[in-house]
Structures are given as C-alpha cells and as structure tokens.
Image (tube, rainbow, N blue to C red):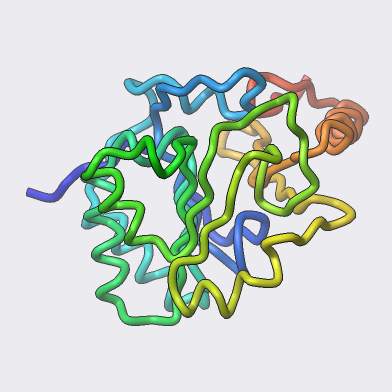
Amino acid sequence: MSERLRLARAHFPVTSLGYGHRLVLWVQGCPLACPGCIAKDTWDPAGGVAVDVADLLGDVRRAVLAGADGLTVSGGEPLRQAAAVGSLLRGVQELGAAFDVLLYTGFELDELDSAQRETAELADVLITGRYVATAPTGLIWRGSANQRMHLRTPLARDRYTDFIEYEPEHPPVQIEADREGRLWWAGVPNRPETKRALDRGLAALGYSLESTSWRRQ
C-alpha cells in the first residue's frame, strides 16, 4: 500500500517559490505555530486531505511533461510527515530529470531526528528555520532573516547560487483562485509593506483577508 501524505493544497505552475516553473505541495499540519505565520490554515494536523504518494508522483510526472523545472514542498511542516515526504522525494529522484526539489522546514538542522534528516537530505535545496516576525528580510523565498538556504547538489548550486543573497525589489507573489472563489497566494511576502500592499489592492477589488485566503465581499 502506498504511503499517504496529508496536503493542504497543490498547484502547478508556480513561479514564486523557487527556480522556474514549479509544482508546489503545501503539506498539512505544523507543530511549530510561529507567531505571525501566514499559513495558519495548514497548522491543524487533521485538516486537508490525505493523498497517496503514488498519485502525487503521477502529478510530478505530468508536471515534468508540461515543462516543470522542479518541485517545492512547503507547509505546514513537511518534516512532520517525514516518512511520506521521503517516499515522494525518492520517487522524484528516480525520474532522472533535471528537476530540482526545494524543501522548506521550520526546524534547524540540529533539531532533526534521524528520519527527518534522511528526508531532508533528499532535497536539492533546503530552507531551514522558523518564521520570526521580528526579523524581517528582503531575501528571496525566505520569510525572516534567520532562515537559511542550503544548496546540497550540483543542480542546486547551478540554479540557486545567485539567489542566496538576492533581494528583489518586490518579492515574488502569485495569486490564485480556488473553485469557491477564494483567492490565495503562493510566495513569501517577506516585507510587511508587501503584505499591506496586497491587502490594499485586494480590498480595492472587493476582497477581505481571511487567514491565508481572501473571500469576495
């Protein structure tokens, strides 16, 4: 029987959470509960939906055929489901494509147990560290200044070296709509003014912020 991974959402293509065009999985469940987190809807471990890893690998294959450059696994806390995420990433490695994996975790490397470390080592790029609202940063794809980007493979170093210290003028944020008409973002609006600008722009269109999504007024 296939491992199952509990997900909050998945989307392709995403251009705001890593190199190029990506399939992004937001896992469900996070024990860290960082104050100021923009993804509180992913905290509840009983939320979301459980999906077979085999089915997710099918999604990855379709994304590769559609020209995807990589997979980003965010959350939630991916390493809370280390076994299922590890099964997924091992399957991705077997594809043999020039397809990188970027894995987010709120843990520091020295906090990982053996199973979590084994899964983390399957990623090309690892971004570590809790979100700290009092430590803002302009660094791309990171929410606070304490978070670190680790490049673990030649593919990662080829694609991401120039991004380690890169601070874009406007952090990349992608806005999408679900089937119920709610808007949600993909990206890391790491500067307070970025989130305020998003709120103002959406309010002008008749949307109000509810947790990590916007509902039409």
